[in-house]
Length: 432
Image 1 (cartoon, rainbow, N blue to C red):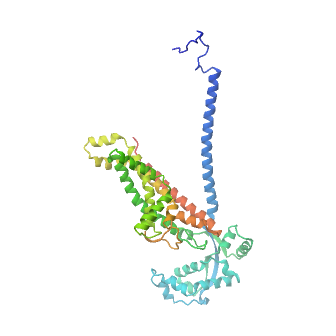
Image 2 (cartoon, rainbow, N blue to C red):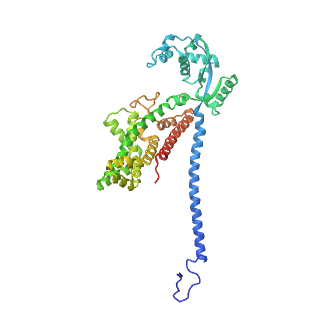
Image 3 (cartoon, rainbow, N blue to C red):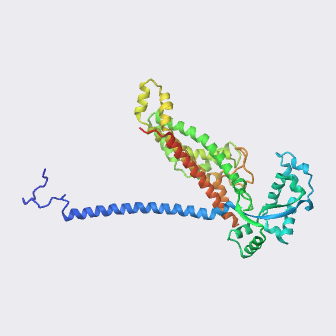
């Protein structure tokens, strides 16, 4: 069909306005293609910039933090029979719960004996080459093998922070000279530091570890999950399946959506006022941290749960009702299992966000100096983000690499949680 109309003068134009062969149409097509190329270029640039920042973060953290997983040690010869230890070997077999062996070795003068052995082995200032906690390594060696007390043995002990930094190529000229001398004697080694994964906080960067903060994070996440998940899922089910559509329901929905965007420190103030001020729960405890983070995570679970429940086709409900299922059977036997992948994915993403939060936990006092990991939910504890924050504020250079190493551990924790979310989504996902 020819849609070309005649001009007012009655002359039919040679080319219609939509004729692809006209110059005007060709210019418009070139402009469209140019706009398409610009859009693709901007999209690709955004992806490259984002990937560049991520790569910069990961490379920087790895370069700074890789050395945090290693430690420099000195081979310290100790003549235990001549060290003058006032110790009864029977005390080493005392009750472990009361720290009998630790107390006995400390009272016997093991720290003094360690310093004396260092002076005898490395010179008048030999004790300065050792970490302040070097004698603790000697104590652990004696506890593991009490027969050492009858012999002259060589025990590997951590070097001081200055020697450790120099051995890794970042020390002062004097420290590097001492490292060179120790290397010529063959008494210095640098290797993997398992104590970084098993120790807790310390004022000495050579003795710090992340186990206390990691255990506190696990306790806090357990409390958060046990509280936020069931309440969030039940709230989502009620709002989506049973709640009447009126202004009160709309008000609740708007409030939940707004709570998901509230700054996290507001939840910290809420936890401080309610859990500590009103219910007098123990300060700095993982229990209070989990309760506070549950308040922050619950709106995210409710929103993710409602979207997942809403995505279940109505035909599933109709088919279940048609074969005689009750409404509650429809919900728990058909709707909830099909919505579970989306609910779990939203829950774990919310938990990952909670794991990285610092501000609300600072408000409830979880920034205390903890030298031992918590044993119960009510014990004083700290978490990984707060531990990283505290170490980043230290002036000692040894804490710089420990901070980056702790960030690597936190990133691995977060990646593991995201990997779990992907696995659960793929495992329970149903396609129709």
